[in-house]
Image 1 (cartoon, rainbow, N blue to C red):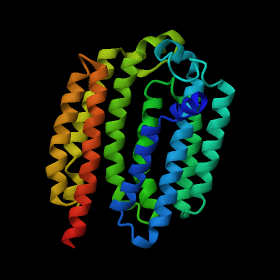
Image 2: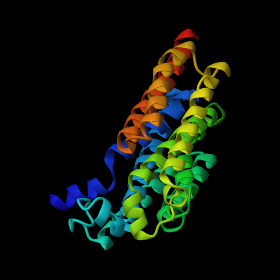
Image 3: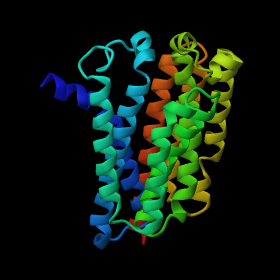
Image 4: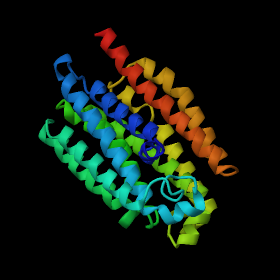
Length: 279
């Protein structure tokens, strides 16, 4: 049981399930039909397995850093061996590809590219200033695109993907400021290590401002209804506050930014639902 709990913890199940939900939201915004629900279910499952595998392999590569930053994680604590974690990640990736094979060609291509990027992230990108953050941001935004591609209509999800990517990039930079001590110890050249924590936080806040200014676009482009604007407005307020808060307390800032991003995602659903009801 302890080993099973350790494997589950490696996947960061909340993060994996949330990513699957974003794929479902992408399909919903792209006007999925009832007949496409089995495909949407397969896409959601593929996303959950892929993110679970990516999180697991990230812990595998980060096991030395986690001995400093997160010694309670399954690998540094000894609950799961590095080899066991690597094998489990392989199983998750295989399950993701099996689920994705029933999807349209564009969705399969997105899934294959994302799986390769998930594997390459920690080994090749994480220690490059800004590159790892940008990759994670793309992967977060691409879940909407994946959902849209699953139902053969990715175009309506492009703006949502960009908004999600910009917000995610800001949060990832703030999280790197949180982990700057361990990253310096391991010799990783993350953005806060290279340019300084204050400048990195300034960039993160600037990205939040960009996302806030661009937030009305889904309504202006008639992708989402007026209720989207009503619900996204407080979300934007939370995100702006979180970006500012990050200068004094990066931990609280990234946590509150995550809350604001969740509220924004809820606004996507409500905004699309209002169009459906109107039609």
